[in-house]
Length: 593
Image (cartoon, rainbow, N blue to C red; front, top):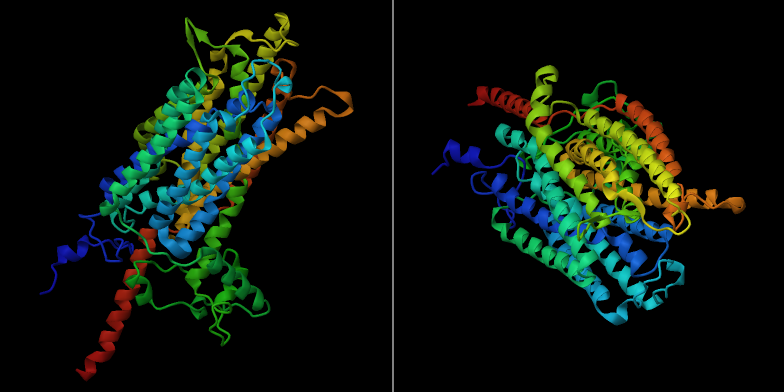
């Protein structure tokens, strides 16, 4: 008996399947039901990650007895690795294992790293003896074995996150079928609420966990994030019966390499003036897989040589128009990616120099001692408030003027965040200038003692950072996911993480370089272990100038960026062409019937 029309309509059209590879119904899998497990997972996982990273610089300085520059660079190098390994995780997901199984395997590695890390801060033999001397240089350094175990655990954790980060957000986005109008509308809000879940977990880490680490103990302070990660993995696994999955579509790197190699090998071959003369697969092959065909575009025209027919059908000599256009989409995003590196260095400052600044200020309210890293909680609170206001009010207000479903374009949203970054560093520089002046007035420059200023003096730079994240970071994640071709979504998501990774490494490079240059010829340098005798105000002013120059570059690359066509529009054209081709075949067969 034929299936009813409503039954056919209930199946997803984007090629998603269950774990066994069977087509799935919208009413049974996916949507907000499936996403709820993913979003709750992210709350606990971010609690675990930021429970380690937010206060890491203080553990390195207070417990492992490292200097300011060394500890800050160790943090940013590790964070950089955390955000770079997702490229490998995206490759494994897209080319071999699929997103679900890549995520599950990586989660085990992640949890293993967290367990080892907790042991290194708990067992006495795995950490140096306690030191109360305010001069770190006089404390006993950690042994080679102790450092190897501690950083080995950190980088094991980094490998694990490489498989979880690019895939968990993509798994969440995969729960919405872009070819169904209602689900597509829900997907527009997904990334806002995704970021909301991230910062909810971060808020708990930056308030409760850092307080426990500073005032109760590092064993419990690291043990709780480990338990939180285990809980998050169980929550994700419990949602397995509700998930939609996309099959691995082959290595995106191989697909892109084939296009570039084929174009280079046909360097002297002319491109037909009519795009219909280029090689393309039959329409049926796309519709059966729930994919859409991409028409040839004039941008990066040289790559069109890859789909010029020359007789050879080798995949390294002949590529389809759609494959070429997918490669173009990934390449077109690279200039935008490059323009996000400098803004990503700003995030590195939150858990390094901003936190170290907090240690120099008065942190007591009555008998309550405020952990310096807890100020990052105000980034989270600001972010949470701004995301909700943006999604509920700003978008609706701007829709009336722009007719854009998002209110403003993703690049415009990113640009606003970059302007806020410039303001943040100007404010941070002026605040630090004031702190140094007070330190001098009270004679605590050489001693390095606390400056008689409240730690809440730093609040403006933290609050503005959260506001900037609501614009820049949310838009960045959504932009690289949205603009990536369907077969390369995990790789597209890893672009935003690569931005954070390179930004962290860039932060390490800038800190080391500036510290080295300013210490030449017997000068005292801008960044010293004693921040009261340093010049972070100069360093922050340097960052403000750097961000301004980067913003100018961003405006240039954004002006020339061309957004890809809407998926629904492309699918509509594809269906019409398919219908027309079938109609033509029927007309040809009519006389013989």
